[in-house]
Figure 1 (cartoon, rainbow, N blue to C red):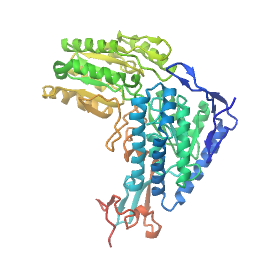
Figure 2: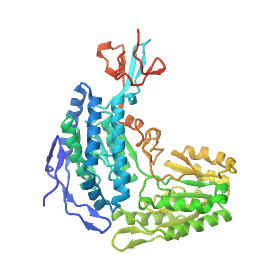
Figure 3: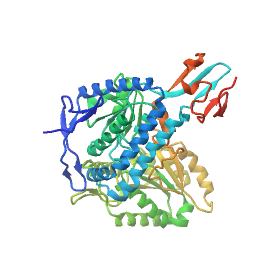
Figure 4: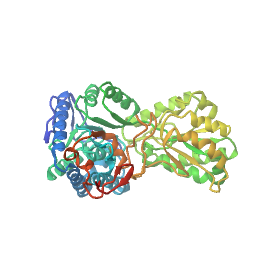
Length: 531
């Protein structure tokens, strides 16, 4: 059996003593694809980490590393656009997603856009938050970590969150760190194509040989060793809660930072005024949001909360009909239907009734019926953990609260989430109800939305794609939104009474770019320090 090579230390080479092999599967046909990929041993991990450490040292020695990194990212984005056809074809086979518009017209342009945003941030340098106190001669800024960053990509975004092209990759590189990419085993071929382009761009722009490296899969113990390796600087992970928490435990035992995006039911609270005004429209909007990408978005609304009454009953009837009429999308693999069924078992066991759907579909593709469940507010409050079980598909559980107090109590018992929404009366008739529920919900979510579904994440500097646990491992950081996302992969470095010529350029009196923003004696400025 011939394996695809791994990318380590500036060379595509066979894996060293692989512990196994795997093949990607087309989820639309359940047929395995032809290529075989190695499961890397600790030998590959140690080689990649050592090479990444050398790359970090080489970056430190580059006379103008931020500009060089920006050139690399710009070059990489252009190469991706030039290879759009093969990338889209491979990703469509490995994920079952439609080539257009999903992959070619939506996700690929988003990917190159965020890569170019990373280049712009590296070039501008304002993300470093350089702070100069001239009276005490103490100066500080954020700087690269000095070692490789490991990136684990998810299965549901083969481009925009890919381990060697997505947001975590861009943030780590733009902050000045080499990356060791651990491909998601759902789309190894797509990741390999990205790695080939990244490697070409790195060579063309004079990056260190191990600026980008790629492993496809590791056994669990080797993955734990990777994130806890003494010379790994940090890890970015997007994936399941169970895998994320195991990696988190391993990393934290070794004192290594790890940034996780794991689980979120993204609650939608529909206040009585909104239900009375436009329940049919909201039901249609919610059904469309839940169905997007076959429900395999981390911001899919999996929990909907309404106040009991005739309007709520009408809304649930409309929502159930919309789900029942929907076309089940293709799930990303065999684990999809199984995990949804397991989640529904938990929800039903704790008071939720299935109104429509609830069964896998066995007709070739991996699919599951669009599913609506209903439970009372009292049932939710009796066991909130169970009734927040995430079903990663076109599934939502409607919680019917007896009054606004109970809606607020439901919000108060939520786990941390990426998003939370409140639908309100357009004329402000339920402002008083909003004032009671929103402050409670605000504490539970990273991004609060009003009269808008959460599915999808805009690549905006103001975006927060994060939130309290278990949505992420740390509520103070975002995985989307440049330049803020870069701060996860940087350390705050302080210089106290260091002589001017020994300071980093960003902290010297002269502004290194002429346009970089720095906080000088309490005032944001693009000027040089005078006097």
